[in-house]
Length: 131
Image 1 (tube, helix red, strand yellow):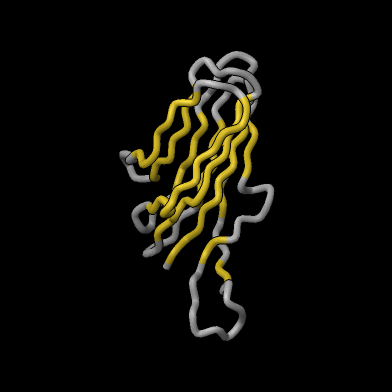
Image 2: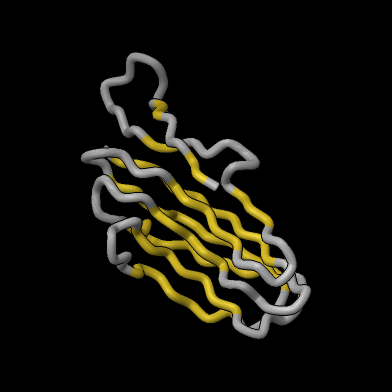
């Protein structure tokens, strides 16, 4: 699932301070996998701009046999920026403070690993593109 950023000025039309950010419209910021399969969300990068990930939330419907959540870029050999084992079912999450920044021009690929068996994964990503 790919997300395309939309720029807005959170300070109102005509404001001198402009902080472009991505507004991710529901349901594109969430994904539900199939039984036993990985779940992934790709935030589309833009030339000369960096993606910043603010928050991740995830859940498995039961205890996974091999739970893992990662944030990688879309480079030829992807770099991993966040990698966390998930050992229990149910909801969990992570807030990046400050937000996790990726190099400019690259996509952010957030993956909730295949849990195995009939377990289903759900994933939420809150991210924005900075100029």
